[in-house]
Image (cartoon, rainbow, N blue to C red; front, side, top):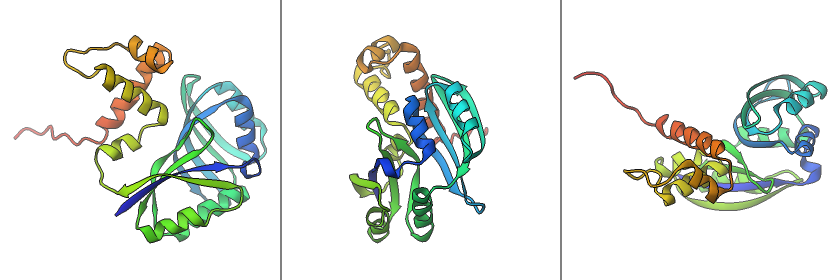
Length: 220
């Protein structure tokens, strides 16, 4: 079993109207945790992001191709469920996934330069479909590949790019040493983030790690 991580860069014609409006507002989606093509030709997406939540609500309310949505959180971090009419590019991508034998290791992450980072799990033969049968309007770059072994790499792959940056700074500064050698403020100075944002990222990082641990609390 192997994995390959690729970053897809949609061209302007590859963006649907919802994506264009989100980009115009400067909203930032961090990761797509679930995305499904439904039988009524709509897409259901559960995503994590940050930015002007009220502006996002206004956009989702105004666009006729958006049928349902729900947002939890605030400008520093939110989760959004959206069901919207499928566009041609998304239909090709989602139908192609159904017809191939590879699996997608969620979440799909948004990169700082406008790409979508996706990790596929399967065989090399299955990856050929994922990498070389992309529709017009998408440029694919292979980021890394190798044998797939669930463990530390898998845990890190669950983090967003920004969370990995915060985690790397925290480890290098000694935040997880005993006794602790760094503060949220020192990590903030290295990453260029607000101290409260660093604290939020560290809580999410720790939640992601501990969610993968199975601790037996039964008395023996």
